[in-house]
Length: 159
Length: 159
DNA sequence: TGGGTATTCATGGGGTAACATGGGAATGCT
DNA sequence: AGCATTCCCATGTTACCCCATGAATACCCA
Picture 1 (cartoon, rainbow over the protein chains, first blue to last red):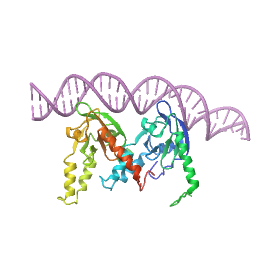
Picture 2: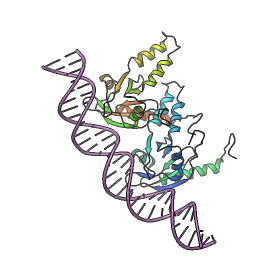
Picture 3: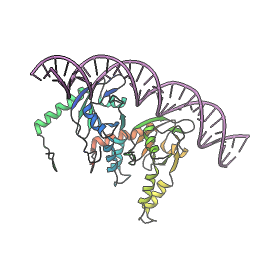
Picture 4: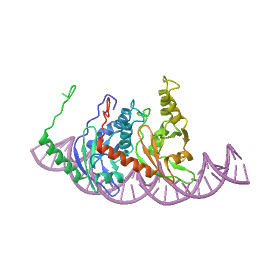
């Protein structure tokens, strides 16, 4: 779990139950990579463009914090980022069985009631309501059919 | 203390009560990172652009102090920083239950009466009145929808 | 290859510790 | 003496931890 070890990307999509306490199980496929890094919690914040919750680890949040370094401390740009991301973020520790508790506001933003869809997004993962997720994916697929999809790998792109 | 040396970014937003003595509880999510660094107090000063109180630790105040190094001692820039930040700052120690007492002037600047909103901002956190905070956030969200928001992570950006 | 067993995993419920908050007593300052 | 500050204890609430159960998967051995 040293610095040399590259964190595994978050992949897969899972549907989980949300119980009366707002608890939901973080799928092992997403949780284990974090546990291997020594993380006991995930940092979550509402996506301000989409009705879903964005999740990542502390390294990524701290990297965002450091990215504001060197910028004008009192600029509007820095203020926008910090206001919309850091203040809206919450550290959600999981219990011994791997569940986190979604704050009420998060459930409202994502429209989550008693079921949630958790999707790996590489460096982050997202929590959706089934309905919003389906709508989002259909729009994505349509867009990919219309416009295509391209990707460029740099460096030694993995064997 | 694996990442203990690295300061965790301040995140989350919490609404707290301000009692008749002007005391308010610094939420554990913001206080604990400071306590882990050995801090028993927070440094606070009025934000000169916004009606809120800016809070940070000594490391950040000292960094700002060092940033004036090499600048003309009698320049307007140095004079502004000195006048608007250092002279207005106060160290606010928390009691054994984690509460600080807001000076009267700070409460006036932020328009705080019996309730306050405390928001993490990465390297700092802010104390608002609920009303001003709501107005500020609505403006931010509108701005983000209109103009978008971009941020580039360099280096080990979340790896 | 098939059946049986052992782990891992998702889910439900209840006890307990941490936390935010209120009030009162002791201390210091004017 | 009067006021302000701070320390200390009490309380209700919330969130966290640990128990147990069922299902699905992976593993093992014949």
